[in-house]
Image 1 (tube, rainbow, N blue to C red):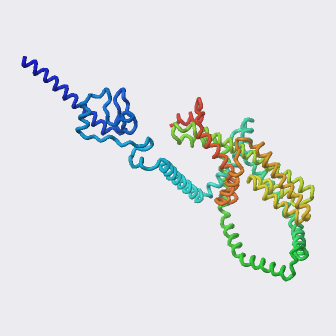
Image 2 (cartoon, rainbow, N blue to C red):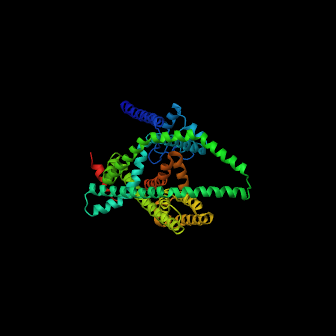
Image 3 (cartoon, rainbow, N blue to C red):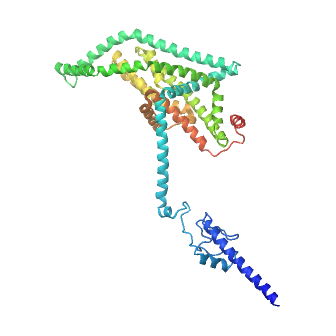
Length: 452
């Protein structure tokens, strides 16, 4: 009988000991749990270590019982502090949520700004390489359709690239030769008419509303000559520095030619190599964004060439009708200036207005000015939206800001490259931010993922 009582006592003692050990284990687990303590089955924990709304540290119905609660009380475990769902620290929870968000944005923007500044410094240091490569990309986008036509005619790739590149160079050199020859032939006559125009201006200053005397005119002329004499050294030093960079200019031209040739011939292989350097999970996204950006660049360059040609023909016709000298060179200047959107053709048109003023008088100059303004309106409201379309649609404010930033950073080359760069980045960011996933990855990505 005594042995039966002892066995019962041992069983009760074992049960109590088991409950005590279970309570200690639950308290230890609550202390070491990084989420602030997880609830038991049927009673899940909520963030911040709160087992149920309005209850902190209360045992769930499936917990070992009062022993566990007593054990938690004996050990002295303090209930976890309630924090905001966006932070894991009580100190951070004391900071207003709006201030935490502003601080998070601030340091991230600072990091992005520092990285962007570093990239600009690197590009400035190696501009002799970056600028020719950018020009080569633009030329490749312009000549790529011609290479595609020859490839479809079963030309070898290297031969098709060489034919297109040599033909493009011949066209550029021939145009420049015609422009230079016409300028050389017409400069004496234009110089004579310029002198007559200056005398007319002097007469107008004396007889016009200003009523300047000969002594005042001579004073202003002497001041202008003194300014030129004082700044002759600056002009000379600039010419010397320009001559010193002749080797860099020749190097840049050679690099443009070689880069354009290889971009046209091996562009797809170069792009696959770049994509292969990325993680496999990101390859299809980058490949899709890169190909869409290239299509945007091709569309931009082709549309810009067409718009520039229309501008040059429109202004050139009126220059011929009014018998303005240098009609062909001025039209070529308008064509080249139109590659800088909005402002390029307008500035080159001003040169045509000045030549008309010197050669034919103010009435003809006003007519040419009206023609230039009309052509700009047609370009901005009809040609640009119709030809470029939605693929490269950029707000005029973005175009102006991009051109201004490009001029500040890289001069004329920056103004030339700024707008296509903005168009390409716009397309790339939109594609990378898209949430659509293709059914099958592109061929280039498949090849890249299988490559060693």
